[in-house]
Image (tube, rainbow, N blue to C red; front, side, top):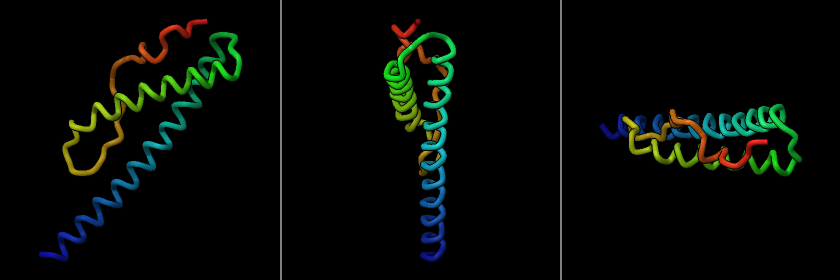
Amino acid sequence: MKQAEKESQALTAKTDDLEAKWARERREDLWLITVACASIHGTRTPAELADFADRVLEEFDRRFRQDQPKAKRSGKQARMGDGNLQSATAGTSG
């Protein structure tokens, strides 16, 4: 029984590592997509684009943490909220 428990814990740890890697990659993708979209829709300086993307990521992180209690298993789940990013994009129209 202990062997099965160890294997289960190892599998859970590996799954958590893969999900964390996936979340980091999606987060990086989101940042790049945000910068690209914002640069298309207005004239912003590179600093303004980076600030805008950082605010979008803060909202992503907030929603990710908010979703954690909804996890159906012991490992972390990398999920995004389904709402809009209005609070992250407030005041950035240009």
